[in-house]
Length: 451
Image (cartoon, rainbow, N blue to C red; front, side, top):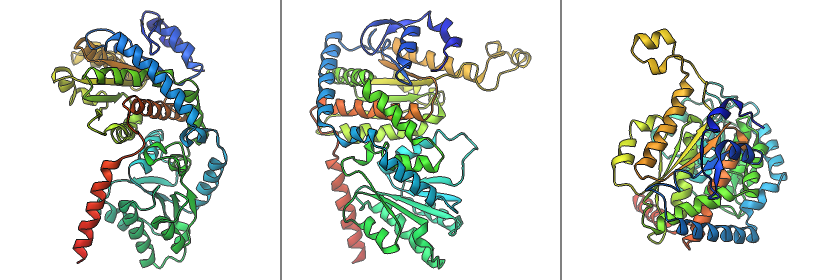
């Protein structure tokens, strides 16, 4: 368990309202919850002041959200039961070890949920310490970017991990076909060793592609959609390639599943604000570069799961402190209607410090002797409190240490929160019917080009 001794003096001075809706000592609450979860959630700024939803509406939503989670548990969806499996991780570990042999680079070909989870986990790899093989994600179809990548890569040491649940994602299939063609032009007789495919266990174009070149295939769980697949081989196989602890990711997810009160409270808070017509946007604002791409993963999860039948709220991602200089003006003085979720980590005393003499010389005495992490922590606290004073509801999540366990916990927290929110809204959070229309039309245009 992490030591909180250096923060206890400040924590003992604070109090608020936690996600269970009870008054608490912040220091005690963190120490108690940290025995089970790698993060702590505070709703003190969301459930008080002008930005708070009506208390009876929040409590009613929280009760209904708890019942919906109970119903979800009874259904035992594969998304939850997979957390207790070990055979798939053993298979993924064996495949990763074989796949990275003689590889300097791995290109992950996949889009949306087939890529963003792995990219979020990649944020855990320390800056400048990318292990071999180097892992690159090509999730956005851009002709120049991919052509440039193929032009400079070494065909003999570049491997391709191709991920598509349906096996028919056109962007991913275009990339896979182009990569295989490049290998053929280099007369690579070992093309089957350069590719590894993840797709659901049924006949589809990607599985036919794998069969044609003779490369191995790992089954994508049929009962888990792409944007919910980060805790499967879709996210954990790339994690293993990057040298991360896949078992720890799942352990963090299991901890949240066992104690999901914060996810229940988060969904209830969103729903109470939505019912009052005060949730046009929901903003995720981590104060750590390691969570930058986590925001992109969450944005797809929320938008694609809940934006249906004229309902939903626009997910907005921010990154602190940089977005204090680009979006905060709008957040503070714009039309309102947003819920803000701040994610912070332990930064006090971290990073380089401003020399006292130099800081005084340039007239910045408040920075004298302060560490970079001190400034970031102060800005996060000040920004959250300023928003709350302007009547903007603010939820705070503190993650003392951002590691594999914490990431797994955050993944599960936000997936449960999204699913419960969908059930409160009486919509299916697992489908995306409106997206299919554009796909059909794009294929029709391509067929027209051929003629």
